[in-house]
Length: 79
Image 1 (cartoon, one colour):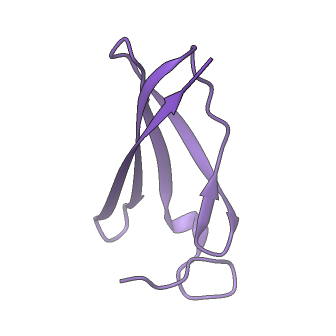
Image 2 (tube, rainbow, N blue to C red; image 1 turned 180 degrees about the vertical axis):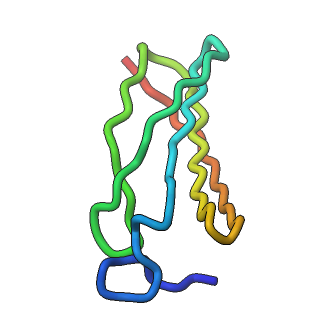
């Protein structure tokens, strides 16, 4: 719905599980948990294995209501 997520609004960060799925140039996918960092923002550290094209898919889930959001982007890591 676009509502803010944060400790001082009705949509609290602990209601969500947010994960980054990173698919590397070799086709291997690694999952990284993301943590709440500021209003409507989740962040985490992602390690890549070297140069190449990576696909990052972020999945946000709200298990209590069965809501899921997905966003995908590509990142090119150079030498």
